[in-house]
Length: 335
Image 1 (cartoon, one colour):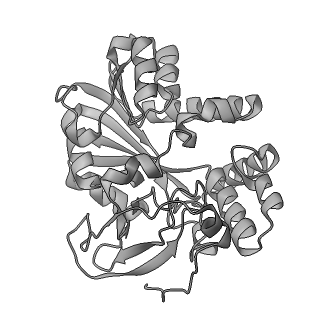
Image 2: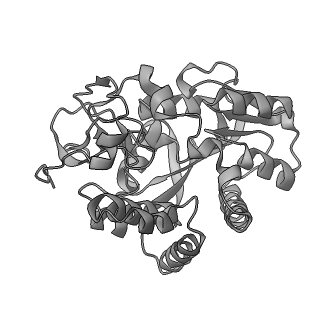
């Protein structure tokens, strides 16, 4: 279903801040299927970090239903749209102790569920987009694996240096260019909220499939387009858009098909808490539509502990009832 474009002027707050206009690259065809029948889906600005003045547009492929950003930032602009203070690089410094403890509990529960689908002992682990290394440490502590067998990929050089000093095998590289991991050597690979950021998901999944040993597991978590908050805030304010850092958006059908085409068969699908998407959606609506800046801060996931707890609990209940939340987790096995 296509949607008519909306009139969306640049927020006054963004104009006053006057960040740069970054260079853009036109895609023109669906990255997943190559189709050229792309229709308007949604548009918006960098509502969260306000790194650029550009207006961005998501388009939907009428052939395979994939949604992608087009145009998107040129790769030369990545250091602009991912500044040093980007939250995934500094999450442990920004979140409260209570929020971090809750996140640790949720992370352990998620990893325990994923590992149930590995049919042999875990010997090697790779986390793509490992950030500050919280999943690397969680796997090490719960599975007694040497750090020499725990790998990570990350595009923040300082973070990589810290993790390498700790003994983890972490590379400052993208999946597509990394040659430090041997084919058929990885038991478990995870990509938690990373696939939506990459330039070419097909090439990325193909490379990961090559790294997995037969029967190895790949777990991907990503925003889910078929969720209540994604529909309520579809026009521009949905937190899952994360303009302009999310380049690809999926739902269960499109992500499952992507995995199957690269020899990875989905064996488990679940819906995790999408609390940050709910919170950013309300934050953007209140700040930029209603222009209540101070009130919007209550919905900042890095600061608003009360609503973080509320929306986490809300989505845990919904997921337990079989309702699709805005955070999709798919586990696939290398065939």
